[in-house]
Length: 184
Image (tube, rainbow, N blue to C red; front, side):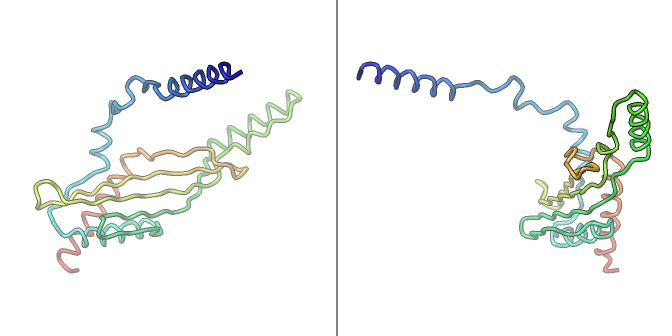
């Protein structure tokens, strides 16, 4: 009995160790092809060392864009904000309606309207840090969104990749930093 118990213990230990020795997937640490392009969209350099003024300008721009500040840590150069928005799409609603009509004509009861987007929460995260040159400050912003469907279930969570949103943010931030520098 003792020999069988020792053999089973050794067998399970070997299984546990074998499970811990799994390999990482190929390309696990490889960056996506568009990484540099995406980073250029999300990041700008400003010719100032005053991170506090930049954080203040970031907060103002986010509020002007309808965001509510969730968290801010000036010493760390961090600001996060969010806003709720309607996610309904006329095209999506029309397609779901026609699918429901076709389902009803076929004798089945489809409910595609419930899978349509209802509302979304857009989150903005901004990080500032001094550049390696020392006389500039780097600002990086990312926008994410959580979308709920008509059943109040999360239908998707995604990073917003629309360059126009980032261009608008940085244009407004540049204006705000300029106005703060001029004390206007």
